[in-house]
Length: 158
Image (cartoon, rainbow, N blue to C red; front, side, top):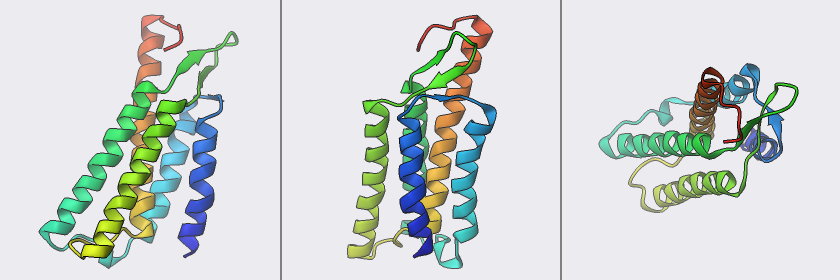
């Protein structure tokens, strides 16, 4: 229950932060995914380890969604260089829509798991871990885009 309270505070704050202009920094790109993934990894239990084909498929689907939507968000989030040389980023309707899609898909998968019993329902540890993975995928793409533009000398908004 405590982890869900942490999630109820940490996830909205993370999304709020992304929807406001903020500097892109190495620390910022690393810190949030690590926080989510560490909480998730330390919260996993033996019951969270897939034990049959349905559970493995469920985890693989969840992982695939987290990575794919993270890459997509990272590719479309606007970034720009300010006059003082600071790289900035700010989410938009598309990036928040992709977050809603991910959370909705995870909720739907959990509901199907709970109703049918076909595969185990998501644990709070798994939710944190896959959110961390999604943030990491997003931030790797943002870092890659920013570095590529620095190398090319292209500093226009993209």
